[in-house]
Image 1 (cartoon, rainbow, N blue to C red):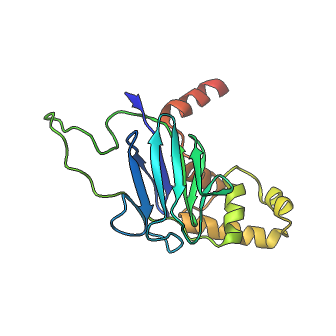
Image 2: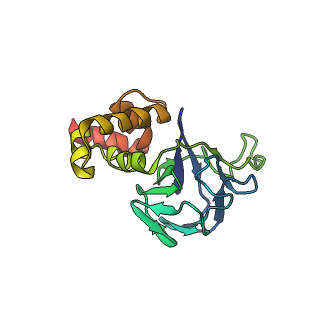
Image 3: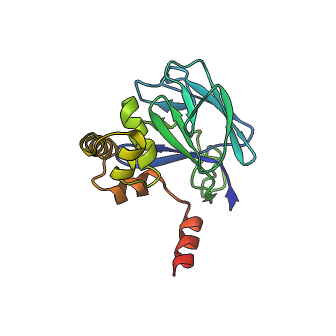
Length: 199
């Protein structure tokens, strides 16, 4: 088993990931010709390029209209590290390094030992969020309460709660617990280690 960079897209119904082959450059955008297709109106036809490096991902914006972000910062070109969030327009992704055992990626083998057919480009459908709602999302994903979010963004409780409800609806969840499980998936090895420490 090996560790590979995995880009995880936050979908409305599930969390999907794609393993990134080291040293390969991937195009990201709405166009069907892109390596990673993101079906969001906030994403440009060719939005960005990603180059998988050992233990990091080089993220380059392609003069997109709505920008490319690593964590909170809009970037032209930057390195993203595992556990950091990457956003194309309003489409949010997480970069992880789980242990993979021929589960994802473009160079998998069949049971007979031969290579599988090259898969279709991964297709992501991210939740559409307004800029204000995205700021709430960015704090919510860190586990902050509605009261803490309101204090940090200087918003009253009612609009914060409304944003949270709409974010849950866009992500296809109904509670904070479900949201955090979907939005911040952990590799099995990390999850198991965490449980042992708490036990």
